[in-house]
Amino acid sequence: MPWICLSGEIKKLKEYWCEVSKSNLPMMIIGDSGVGKSFWIQKSIDIKSESKKIQKIKIDYSVKEKWFDTINFQIKTDNLKVIWWENFNQANQEEIQKWNSWWKNQKYNLTSDLAIYWEINSQEIEQFNKSKIANELFDQFKSFQFQLPTLKERITDLPLFVTHFLESANAEMKKSITNFDEGFNQFFSKQKYKNNLHELRDIIFSLVAYTSKKQIQFSKIPIHFFQQQIEALDIKIGVSLDAYEKAIIKQNLKFVNGNRLKAAKLLGISERNLYRKISDYQLDEET
Image (cartoon, rainbow, N blue to C red; front, side, top):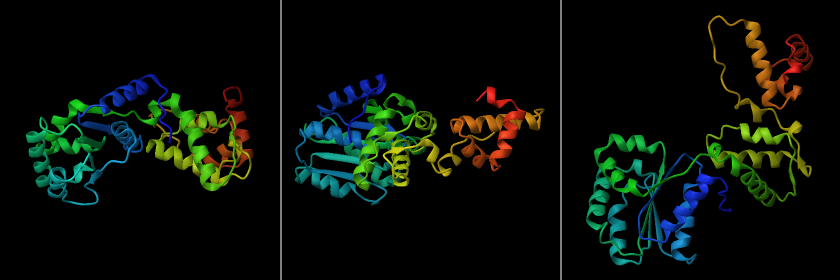
């Protein structure tokens, strides 16, 4: 996957990340699910190792409860170059205390070629705050933290990610789809992307799987791609039903870029009924 960083803030973050990667400082990376934390860590490791194979170990506390004793032995006896913490919020208090004590004793004496990475999901931080020991360790590392933005905060980069995932889907499914039609411009920008790049990839792979032509056409998208994306209605006292119905129809039409067949399916009414309501509410002039 290419390292896509066009927008100003993420570009600066990348430059700083690369620079710190040349040092022996520990690196903490924080972000929501699917923003690319593991990808950034691997890029940093490549910089440190000059893309040569080095001995590293990912300490994932969702897989195994106890790591410290084994890893500490490897640090002392093996040529271990990289320690990579993940799902640290699932570690028990004993493990956290051991790492805390180890870091206090070793942080000024670490060999210059031992790299430490701590990958943190944004939701984990609240759990660290509830544990005195975990919070103490977190406080020692937070001076070295990097916060990755969500995909919604990287709209400038979105077209490049779309292109990359389209190429990946083509390669995996042995297809040769060239692009998306113009109707997708708003479709991709309107998505909520709760799982960020993971969600964008899944959407594109699904679209490629559905398509047999050279171009993916917005008018041919299955209706389920829209059903989970429309926001809940804000109910207010004293607003007429007609006003709500007009707003609902208008919002659905806007969401599907004016495609009345798709809007009718989302609304659960016939296309003919939708045409009548558009005329009654004079929505032709507004959509």
